[in-house]
Length: 259
Image 1: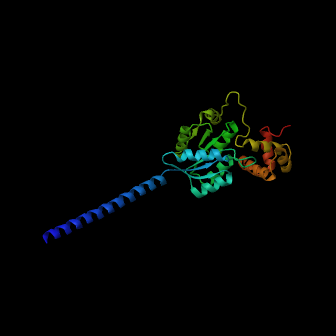
Image 2: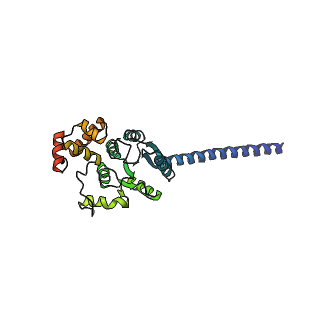
Image 3: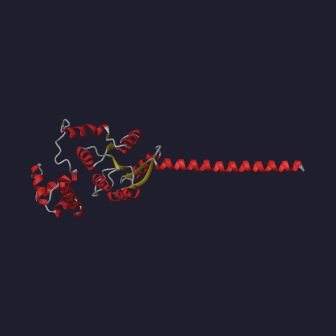
């Protein structure tokens, strides 16, 4: 009889230990999952904006492979970029400057995004290395500017730098930016007229200053009348001009509008 009681006691003890081990294992698993979830939530959230699908997918794959980084959205247009930022509230936006023929540029998208969410950092990654593109991007609020030939290590460094409030420029554009900020010219480079405007906006303003109306400008530049109106609206805003006539005066003072 005593042997039977001892056997029952051992069985109850083993069952109790198994039950405790199961509970401990469950707690450990839950804590592990929570830790992974917290780590993901605490990482950098990225939106990639580029109208070229192959490059966009490649960039998203590269960034998604980095520790502490997650790609939460992608877009190929200005409107799509703004919508993605509103929906996902990213820490960093990777921004191309050329978003399709006749489409609003990445400079305009950058300006709209920072108006909506100033805390977001914009890192421009583009093929364009001309002075106009660099200056316009920085004036719009971009914190970094890299060319598409940048290495994966340079992309990662750029993302983490702008996310922490730093300004990062690729070596190919740094000298231009420094010259612009210090008021000096890069040897051999022509002075930039109205650098707050993009190249296309300067073209439109030049034609306005020559006396062309919107329809004539749209035909000359092969743009839709709506796109011309959008450019003019941006020009007035950037120049802080109250009217078309005032913009014409500013353009002629800067040397635009000549034959």
